[in-house]
Length: 259
Ligand code: HXC
Image 1 (cartoon, protein in one colour):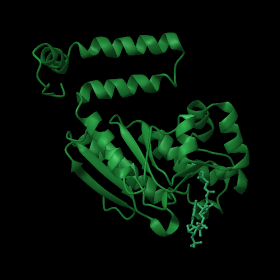
Image 2 (image 1 turned 135 degrees about the horizontal axis):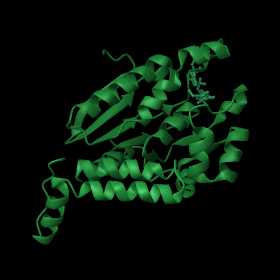
Image 3 (image 1 turned 120 degrees about the vertical axis):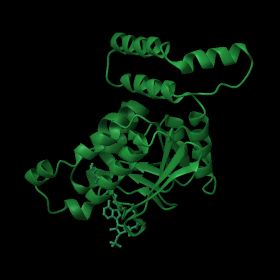
């Protein structure tokens, strides 16, 4: 697939790919084409067998200012149903490799939701997060009411969703939405550093760990614990478990095989 709105570097550093939203004039507004390309790029990276962590970023001014309002303005319910754009969001949710959102500038509406669909968010000090859909007569549609509420709690999520106000990177960090903040010239480096830390772990264990953490949002505690235990047991069938534990005992760095 030829990308019109993405720049993809499959190996910015060993085992780490960078996917950059590249629709700068429209502040990376997520039209259907962008979403289609994003799913394609993520799936290709997932299948290449080399990538262990993906950094998703935008530009300095915007990670993404939301779904494309101009594209949606004339649509009716039937159009929305027929287009089924959430199929693309669902496909992104199924990517098993960890994805780190490196956010500078606006992460609004669908842009904020996209960052929250990622597994971690590293923010530039300039980042602003918000769900301003209420100001254009709708509500968040790609997980904002759910993921934001789980991330920062009901009171703060309710305020953002009902008023459309933005929060700063510092506020997002204090609220637990963001994992690290860095100055504008360093936030991407910081995200790459984090990606490198993840990429140095057993890719198999990372995959099962991501899956297990995400279950915390899907299951009651007992079922989540059960899920975690199964993944834990499963790893004892892997070469990486033997390698990791033997390497510890032998006081040497592990060499992961990913199996
Ligand atoms: C389409 C957008 C856009 C968007 C910005 N642009 N956001 N186009 N969809 N979401 C375009 C503008 O129309 C403008 O193009 C150009 O980008 C620059 O934006 P400006 O408004 O001139 O910039 P500025 O004054 O700095 O304001 C920045 C802003 C504002 C505060 C981010 O653009 C804004 O409020 N954008 C909309 C944010 C929003 O409501 N997002 C939620 C969308 S709904 P032109 O050609 O006019 O110069 C949503 C639902 C998700 O996301 C549901 C799941 C799919």
